[in-house]
Length: 117
Image (cartoon, rainbow, N blue to C red; front, side):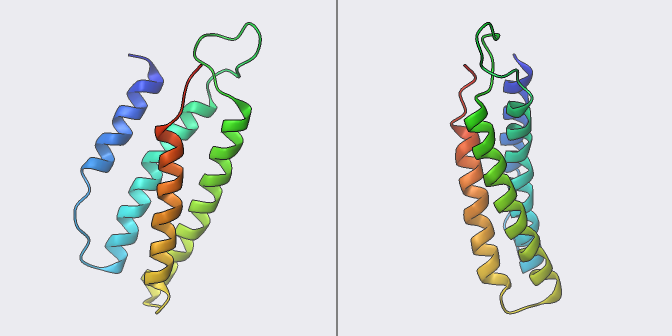
């Protein structure tokens, strides 16, 4: 099994172990866990050699790396805001959590459709 496949499998196992949150803080923690699992896959993909002439069979496309970086940056920023709002008991915590879930889902969707050649 390749290192990339192993990391992908590990990330999926981590996501599958999540429970049902009882508080806004727990909900943010679960979304953050999903984010970190997707980030493991995105970073592993980024570290593959670039797909260029003479590249190995397993490689990464620069365009896809840029998409992953943009999705990761967006999800991370929204997630940080949701975490702060949940910790401080702000009324915007629920809306920010929903936005964070959507941003992390977009990143996860990208990582689930990665091709390595």
